[in-house]
Image 1 (cartoon, one colour):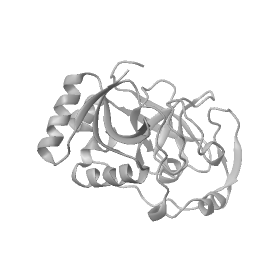
Image 2: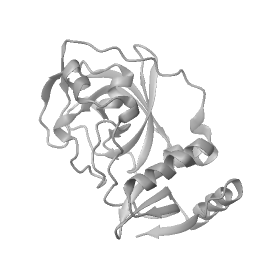
Image 3: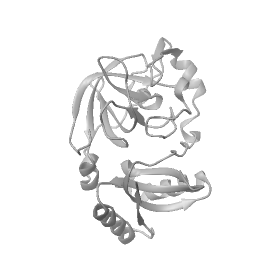
Image 4: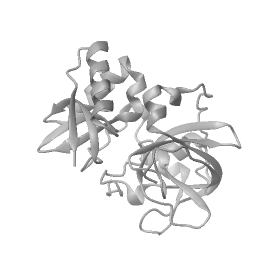
Length: 242
């Protein structure tokens, strides 16, 4: 899929965890099982989707940064944390997936009213981490994964992706250290929550760059940069990645 078109699917979701944690995804980003991400066969990378568990009404927003799943009948592979929030760690589960288009993001339509995520309850039954790019499944218990997971307040910062998608991006800052970029990201989201689905940190030429995008045209990126400069003290500049 290359056009900015809506997509709604109903099918099975799986998830992948520790076996792939810290390994590259199809986008070049490093897989972080504690981040809110997903793998899809055709959605643009990077892209965004709303995933709903019809059994309990829970919804999550995920960043699509990987390809998969590679099993017939499955429509999306989720990170451990996304699956935890949906309460589908027991295995493959029915879900509804709705792509959030770039136009939805620009217009703010993605922020429609939704039910808050209910706390996920741990389960002691064996669960299966769905196969990711390597195609092999692993068996773990929710208790084991929960013990391996850091507390929410101390969750590790996601590693910087290796490369950004082609297109136009709005750069908000560049830092020698990753924690500097992540601190700025949190500060930006405090004031400009609508920017959340677009923000990413990329490592390039030795610097960790906080950028928003990608945008289909330089004009779209320029308008966003101007809006950010007007709404805050950010010195936003437009950059192009080829």
